[in-house]
Image: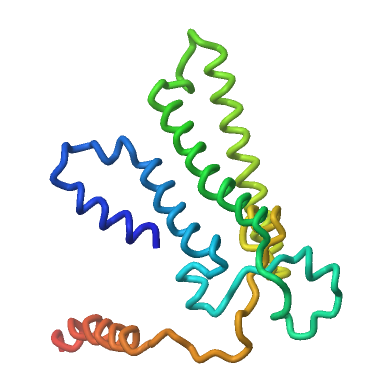
Length: 196
């Protein structure tokens, strides 16, 4: 969703000074992610992709206390604190990390031999990124095994995606996909049939 919105904004600012939008790309990404968070998670609505899959966020801490979950659909939505921490971690964390990486790359902290402090900060950033990627991979393996938390933010906040309604018709139409697959097969077979 944010990629589609970003594409439209890039088209709007295409006549401006070249490179101007690239300079403020982390701010633009953070603003779009904040808008998506504000009009979905903050008002207890699913994001558009989550809504297509008939899912919603549930506070797992409240469900564990009750212990009388029968269908897996019960349970309250996220608390205000969970929503705020989600915004801080997802929107703010990504923005700060992107800005820090672009600043350090522009200043060439990794190549600086004269400034040992900058070199140490660069090494620390690389270690933090490696640890985050390792933890994300571990979380992916746990998600594939248990099916509970998609990313580290959801795991830390104990915000789980569950079905919103037990029986919902599929909202996705596969007509276009089927037509595309048929035409793709025809276009692959056409050169072979013309040779004989």
